[in-house]
Length: 290
Image (cartoon, rainbow, N blue to C red; front, side):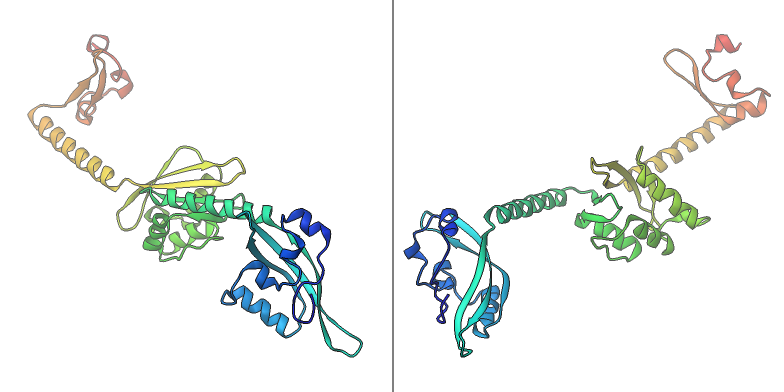
């Protein structure tokens, strides 16, 4: 470019890559070619560099070509001065990074769609990488951890650090007797996931925690709130116990049999009265027992 920052020469390779005629570029400034205003932050900085005659590297911008296609270009340059030290323009190199930028945009779009998808589910969702660092999670997972532990979850946090903080703040009642052992066992199960586990938090809420490994050795975690189910189970058990108490008042014991007429349940009172083991009766018909 000359001292007025107008293109005076561009190599043939540029015109092989970008379908424009030389007269559409030569004699113009980069701003005129790109069709940009100076109010964009990266352009303001770029023109500041040019005004101060500073070298620049990897300045990226896009331009819309006459055929409507968009090209992404990346350029570097250094100022040129004549023998008297007078500024004579810039000389530099450029690259077409359209394919790279297109892939970046596709990746960004895919991640945005993924985040939108996991935000629609009611469960807490998190994905950890092969080094057990948090890659992404939904707001439900963040709220769950912050509510129980006060920890502000951030991408890059390790699973162990999150679990350890939960134990240290008293959020996991089951860890009370042996906190270090509980953390160690929980992390081991996390890294080698199997069947879902049930965890109770200090506020009385219960979660079913399901974990699965990904193909690249990451781990997906899903927290499902089962507090209502647990409460219903507790209520049902209390109701059953009341029934057993009443039934045993009316007789010495109560029992249940399946459709094959085999014993499936006999209350403890029976074994207090008869000095035999449960194996002697359970699973048998009354005839077999008698």
